[in-house]
Every structure is written in structure tokens, then in C-alpha cells.
Amino acid sequence: MLKMRRYAYTTRSKVMRMYEVMMYDGGIYRSNELLEMIEDVGGVVIQKTRSAQMFNVTMSIPGEDKEAMEKMCTDIGGMVRSVPLAGTEIAIVGPTLGRHHMPHPICDIAEILRESGSITVVMGLARGRGKATSQISMQEIDIINEYDAAIFMLGNFKSCVEAKSHLFDKISIPVILVTGPMPEGLDDLCEAIIPGVGRKSERMRTPEERKKLDDIAEKVDDVVRIKRKMLEEDPLFVHPAEIKQLLEEYEPIKESLRPAPIVLHLDGLRLKIPMKDNADAISNMTVYGRRLGDIARISESRINDSSMMIRIMTLSEVNDIDSAKKSA
Amino acid sequence: MDVIVTGTENYGNEAYKKLFEDVMSEMGKAVSLEKAIIVLDPEQPLFIFSVMLRNRPESKKIADAVSIRTEGSEVHITISDENYAPEILSALWKAYGRDRVDQQTRFDIKIDNADEETIANIEIASGEDSKREILGALWRTIPEGIKARHNISEGRVITIAATEEIVTQHVKDEALRIHNEIKGDADV
Image (cartoon, rainbow over all chains, first blue to last red; front, side, top):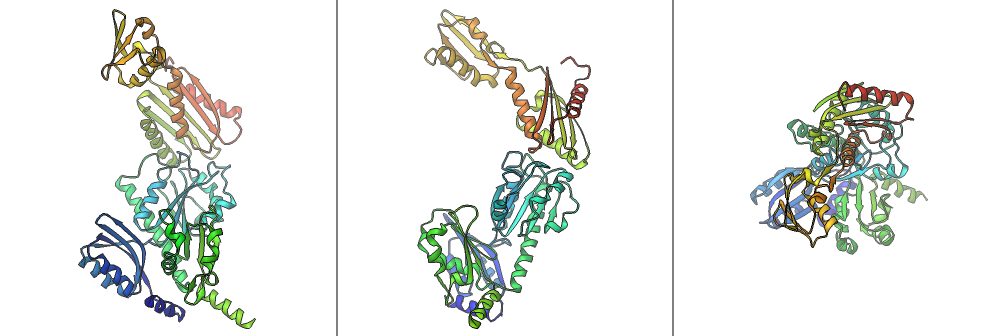
């Protein structure tokens, strides 16, 4: 806890520490030493999975301690894996959930992103199929905007892909467009375009296709890295992983049977508990002497009423609110 | 299977040729097809898929998939085409009830108090089923959003034209042209 406080003070005094995300993949043997070290350096455990004698820890640690942490991981018999997308939730959106578009290649893309550490959500639009008849609703736009980035998967005809740009031109999060042919005139509507995939009826398993999936993961990493950098320019008041640590002790979260009741985002968290029963308790939690409700925007997820979103304010936003209060 | 694809976009032509072949083999229909002509015009949009089957889809009877003999009041059948085993068993159960149908081994079935000729004429697969499966495979290949469709079915040739607009006479004429092209001089 002391370490966490120190981190907060450094954050507030704008002496930012760069955090690195990595994964320990090894056995349970001496893993308590690893967990202690994460705490000692002021890092946070993003996800911890134990399966029999195997143990995986995704952690966020200060950049200057990366080398020491890697040494610790190898000393206790495990290995370190790079998970550049850890702490992100990414939506992969197809025109529909029909068998024309699922499971391939959408699920192949989701799989490669999960290997990079991201939490993925596969989504089909209600009326996304067709050249002239495709549509996206406001509710679908709002749901997609809850994620850190979205991958839109379109088909094999250039003219169709270009005609369907309205599906993602109102999305405010970074959009990566994956298509068959290279479309023209869409560069300003999305962060990246990856051609050469298109509609497929079987798994992407040839060397060229695996390479293409790696390209997609790399491009998503680039896009997320830019978003992270933008956040560093005006850093969040508190790192989402620290809120996660706090929420892990909250009883409804502990009792939740959903596989990942807390999902980290770049600028906040998704909690898979109902807003109406928990909003007050969560808003009143204390984070570095402040109410969580005062340093974050808490809202119900647009997916349904069983999830809620916490968007952490930036330092400048919190300072702005503070000065407004003082002047009032 | 010979597949000819013509269209306005090279990438789409190649991708759809592979997609068509993959879907057909995934659904076990590639061996039933002799040739296919695919016309892809996403600008209109107009998509025409025309296929010629190797054989005219005809109904199959039990006698086509088994050898059959009578011993006293019992009829013994030995399945020679295992693909139809579930249909044969199901048809016999339906006609004679489970008490009278005894499956002795994987391929041997004994039916009590039955008539050989009646059993031989029981239908186990209709030609319509086969056509329906081919149509299902074609619909799975055609772009999902192109919903306005016009079908032509004649003997062993099936043609589907799909558009997003109204099915005009021009669409029907194009479909008929491709239908006649694939048919050629063959007796369908």
C-alpha cells in the first residue's frame, strides 16, 4: 500500500514513471517471491492464473525494475513473455454473426490478440451486411466506443468495403480495418488498414495467413501504443490497475461468478456487476483521500445493466475541478 | 470440378473461387458438381452462381443401397452404401417399429414378417433433398447481404442470381444466359 501511495504522489507531482507490462509463465514454485517483488517495486498484478502446478502472472511494473523482474522470473524457473496488449479490451466487429462471417477469420484475429495479452470481444452488427442496406445503430456505436480499440472485418470487394465506411466513421475509439482488397479514401476514417484477409470459410493456418495475423497484432499494438502515449501526456489521476486492486476486495466482485469480473482498459475499467446495486458503494470508495466518484466517471455499460464502466479522469481534469471548487 | 469466375474485381474473383471451392468441399458437395460458373459484379450489385451436377438428383430407395434376401418370414438386408445407413434404419423403424427391426451388426439388419419388395421400394433420400443441400451450399457462398434472389433449376443445372435491388428482367435474363451457357449442349 505504501508503494502505491508513493506512486500516486509521483503521479500528482508529474514525475511520471513508465510502466511495463509483462507476463511470467512458469511453475508455482517460489511464486510467492515473485508476487512479493511485484509489490516491493510498486507494481500491480493485472491477472493471475493458476492451473495445477502452472502459474501465469500478467503484471505491470515500473520500467526501471524490468531487468530485475526478468531475472527473478528466470531464477525461479519460469520465463518472461511479452504481452504488449495486456490491460486492454478490444472489440472485433463483423457485419453480422451469420456463418458467412463467423467464426473465420474474426475468431482467428481474436485469438492472436488474446495471445498478445488483450481481452477480446467478438461482435456482430444486427444489420451490417449488404452494400446499400448495411447499417449501424447508435446503441451499437455506443457499445463499441466502450472498448480501447475496434477491429472492423469487411469482405472481398473493394467497392463494397468503400461503400460500408459509414459503419465505422462515427466510432470515436481507434479503428483498425481488416479487409480483402486495399480500399481507397478510407485512410482518414481509421487508424490502420490491413488488406489481404477478407471473407474466409476455414481457419487461417498457412504460414502466410499466420504472418498476416501477426501483422494485425503488431498493428493493433502500434495503435494502442499511440493511445497510451497520448494518455501519458495528460496522465490519469490513478492507474486503472490500482483501482482494480482496490475493487478486488469489494464483496460483490469477490462473489461474482463471471470469468473476469474486472477488465482493465487503458483509461479505466469494466466491472461486471450491476450498476444500480453498486454505484453508491463504488463511488464512495477512497482513492488517495478522494472519493472514486470524484476522480472517475462511473456509468452503466450500454451492453446491458449487468456491467458498469469506470472512466478515470486525467490529472488536469481533476485539477480543473479542484480549482473550480476553490474559486466557487 | 471446373470453376469459371468472371467479375469486375480481380481480388474478389480469386477470393470467391477459393471460397466457393472451400464451402463445397466442407459441405461434401464438391464431388457432386461437374462445373460452375460464377459472375461477380459488386458495383450493381449482381452475383450469379450457376452449377451443373454430375448426375441428375434422383430419389434413392433402399434397394439402391443394400443387398436384400428373404428367409421364411424374415427379410435380411446387408447395407452396401454406409452413407445411407442412418436413413435406412430410420425408415425401417418408421415402417415396421423397433420391435420388428433387429440390427444384428453394423451392416446387417433383419426384419420380421416383412415383404422384400415393399422394403426395397422404401424411399431413403429424395432428389429434392440433394438439390436443397446444393442450394444451401450456394446460399452460404453468396454474399449475405445480397438478399433479392432468383432461382432457375432444370435437371442437373441450378442457377441463382442475387442482387440488392429489385430483381428486374435484366437480372433474370442474365441468370438465364449463364444458365444456358453452363448447360451448353449437354442433356440435363
